[in-house]
Amino acid sequence: MDYGIRTNLGQVLQQLLQVLFVGMTIGMMRNVVPALAETEFGVPRGSFMLLVAFVVAFGFVKGAMNFVAGRLAERLGRRRVLLVGWLVALPIPLVVYFATSWSWIVLATILLGVNQGLTWSMTQTAKLDITRADQRGLVIGLNEFAGYVGVAIAGVVTGYAASLLGPREGLLWFGAVVIGLATLLAWLGVKETLPWAHAEVKRHAAAPLEQAFRPRYPTGVSAQPSTREMFALMSWRDRRMAALCQAGMVEKFVDALVWAFWPLYLHQQGVSLPGIGWIVGVYGFTWGGAQLVTGRLSDRVGRHHLNAWGMWLCGAGVALLPLGHGSAWWSASAAIAGLGMAMLYPNLSAAVADIAHPSWRASAIGIYRFWRDLGYGIGALGLGAAAALGGRIESAFWFVAVAMLLSGAVLYHWGEETHPRLNPAN
Image 1 (cartoon, rainbow, N blue to C red):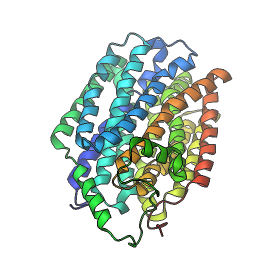
Image 2: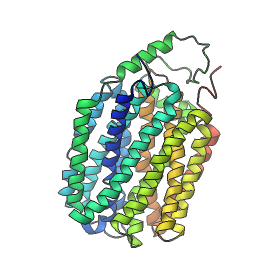
Image 3: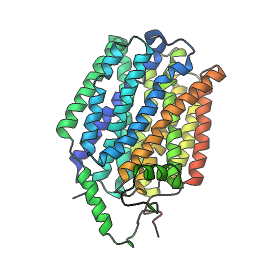
Image 4: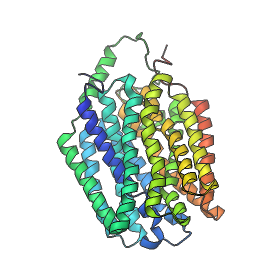
């Protein structure tokens, strides 16, 4: 079988379109819903822990589904898991439309967590199946570019739709069109890529051990590791994988903050719904667009330093946002945070893929994504508690900024360069 972006361009584009829809699906819940939690869905003012409940639910569910998706993909195939993810998403717009309390929104985000865990994992895994090892940074950069541009587009469009049609009607029609079209295209246009992964395993087994640029795979791993063995390897037994997993978890604290508290903070500062969509959109557009550069850059200069410095720059952007006032300041702070996220986000995943054997790569990515997206839940609890204890929403910003600083330091000291050309196995 042939590998490479150009060789498999049709399927790469299909998968990029899928992840654009995946991003738009989560994006429709990230502007209007938090900003109008009090007036539309009955969340009392100052109830920070209740407000973050839907992000907590999303994080724990998505994290678990990432873990499940990786294992299922190696048994059932990538395409079937993708389709199941879209079928689960179909009721989400109706649940939001008919919501009579905040518990309905929590239910919608539980369904969203299942959808995102299954679909986003599969778009990434499928593209890694059909492309070359020296394209991993670029491939994941393209994947996350499409996804987070989708998040940003949805935030802007739903802001206008809510202003024109009303919040419920706007989300209903936007969600129905996006999810319905994504399901149809997944059924008609996406091919199964598991055979490419199987062929890579055979090719790797036949390759001589002394080949140049051999990846630094973890040692002592069985050919077909069990779920328990894989979880231990990724979570603590291999220090490099553990460093990547903890960094992935903590960087989601930023996204939990952006989702739950940025719209609320800006709404309290008097910014309109379309204005909130644009300011938060700067974060998403910068994050998404810059990944076209940072993913490819890591294929040339390596992942490790981009990852560590990305953690620190993103944390700085978070800390800057509440220190000033006005759309220009808030947008600049959002852009700094988005640039830092673009440096780290595709390259943490690429680092995992670098040192994960093709026979268990989908499981490794699934477990990494389990820990990463668990950060939504853990981070939301932490920032909710910080805001409640501090008595003001700004306390959540300081909590996240400090967490990013410390996690970046752990990653820098525990991790290493994983690119096989720059740091090959002996």
